Image (tube, rainbow over all chains, first blue to last red; front, side):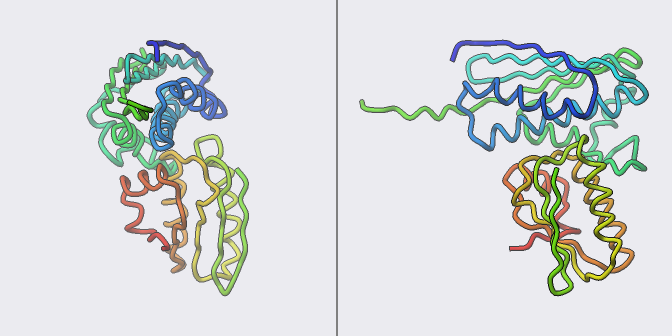
Length: 147
Length: 102
């Protein structure tokens, strides 16, 4: 498959989550991923977008930019918001840590992203926004026909 | 999200159909609470056969129901999640409080 890129901007509405994860998953289909790999990508995207909807823009609707690039067998997904930011990224990424326990939040979002993707990098600026960059190599499953 | 249910032999079976994420979490939460408010059952089995997608928002919803039902002594069991959902259950240790039915 040729190297490829896409960009999507959505409002931070929870009904856009299904749209965002479906678009990113569809874009990756050219890499011939397994159903499990597609499930991993969909889930990781959903976690990152949920963070934007719930945490980045707690009191208003903002914009979320999603960039996806495919280089050889690796997909890179960048999800950027311009919301409140994260003061302590290390703490935010700890399993079961949540700033909203009263809302029945599991605190598993970053843990799931890290478990489902090969690499997750988070950069953030308080009142500037957060950027999550995730990569995953899709294993080639081309079946060679003939010699 | 569509939620089907049936009561059989003091066991409440609830089938989640569709996708469980932030958008459908409130509906799922309130519907499960409404179904559980009857208290005429001794076990809750949540059937994931028709759930195509779930992210960690679902874990929060399940743990919330667990806490409520634990108070009245009703255990919850998980039935037939797909591979991706199962990975989230294992990652979060959910099976330790809600065993998987095999």
